[in-house]
Image (cartoon, rainbow, N blue to C red):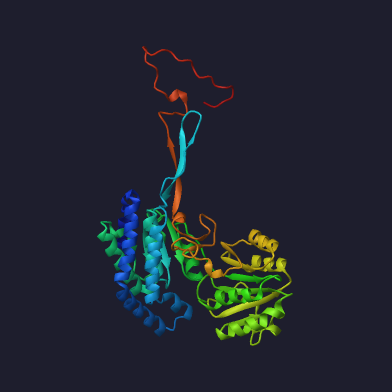
Length: 442
């Protein structure tokens, strides 16, 4: 795709914005449900397209974490459709719910939600993003341009075909969900320069992709570099519960950003917890990289290096460190965390409150798995990404994070400066001039 073609497609996507924001909320919901139905109708075609992508990725010896994120079986395709239905069931993010504030002179002031505009998604090996982003952007009145990775090219195209058919069937211009399938890196660079047409870029993928987007974009970027998630087992913790949370966080889907990467254990309970936990993790083929204090308690573990702290493995590898209490655990997280997800396992309410207050992360879990930092699990229906920066969103981004708020001011001919009023006609009765306090600017 050359620059002229890219420009035409971006302009066509942006041209849909006035119609999108004018749509009735009920029609937007019906269209999202139609998207879900379309994915179900095209499930076999989507699965067949995904097999082509998987075969190519396997032949290229791509990492197992990438293969896991890329794969779409019947269950995951159904989960895609169910996520879209969950989005449709959520309240209208553009509803005007704020009660106006009325000034003494009768001027009415309020703020109401508004779409961000045209949102560009840049992502790798995540075909679910094609459906999630389309539904979330559409329901919040935004158009989107989706630039997936070449490794998911067939899958993305099959999902997009189902979505476009559904939108057209509802009388909506499919250009509001524009898919760019040219893998040429120069196209990405051209896209990232179009701050005149694109309002926000959300990258989802490995750290290298996200840093590349940030470095080359003239458009504001939502950032999420790494998911270095810690779990701290406090001295007061229920050890069986702690072991369950570690296994769930590390072993079930190790290649996702909310998987555990580092376990911190209070020295007072390390000997009681670690040997049995090592056996459970070994059954899931998890390699343990341990500090000198943890190493003797973990059969089969290898010594951790300094680089293992703060590393996102995205694999069946877990760093383990024994610490002297909550203060040392908090210090470790401050130095090595990535502002994604942090977990404490404790029965001490005071320690739990300190952890919640002092840990800087988009989600803090108390006696719950790191795997719950996910838009669907947190009630957002789906997510368009997880922000680990704070402008303008922090954590999983759903419908509300895809809107801004604009001021609405309603008056009855209110003017700020009295001298701006139309001069009185001769037949009008005279009015007393407004007094201006000394030193006040006109």
